[in-house]
Image (cartoon, rainbow, N blue to C red; front, side, top):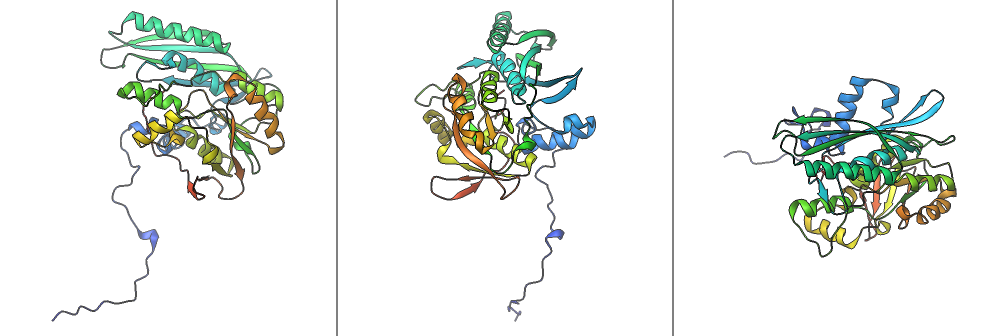
Length: 360
């Protein structure tokens, strides 16, 4: 008869010897998640592009680069827009192309001045569609107070461009005494969001999938330069700003926490989430923290200046619904946690990819 006794003494296990036959992020080709603003995007940038370009200016990995040229402090940024569909409630690819770059410059405290604008157009695209997008670019630039100073046009074969892609780059002046970058966030900072989150991503999804959520959700796309200037009038000592686009607020908070080596505690009950966005996220199984925005910012502000900055934000049209949503702490450096409505806490991790692809 076989011996069926079982030893109660377990062999010691060395986790260092564990192996995985298929590492989760071992992608031999580019996948959609690499463009989603989450962990895959970060790995692509940090392990492929940063080593390839190799310079200290790029290493900051902020929304825009702060440069000194001819005695002037400049912010410089570029972005490409591949949103589908081209037109959606509250905006279009043309609005995004202007506002997205203007806002990246504003996150350095810069006053945006000039943009370049390049169109990549698929053969067969109707000229009235191209004209409508171009007019949207012009209108948005005028509203943001910037000049489209140069541009380019390319046409690609039918089936290789999905209508229209747009690239914009921008430059702006950083005022003297302003030093805004993610590395400056520190324990004690108050975290402020400029308004309701999640509207842009839900607006895109509603049109793309033909969904209705009881009320129309419009994109929040808007230029934030004026709001940032109002905040700087309250104090020049803003530590960090980020516009939570791809990957949403959750990703923006993780990026700042990682760059500064501090922890962030978020109060979920204070987070401004519109009812229609909450309903849509519940229906689609999405977390509003990771849904994209195109007209919102998150600010890390020293506690002694928080009340003045919040008042200045609420006095501006783009910050009328600004709210304090958390704080920067010494605990759990580099990690974001959220206090839930049930009194517990949960980790707000960096998403692997993106919940909603092609949203900007």
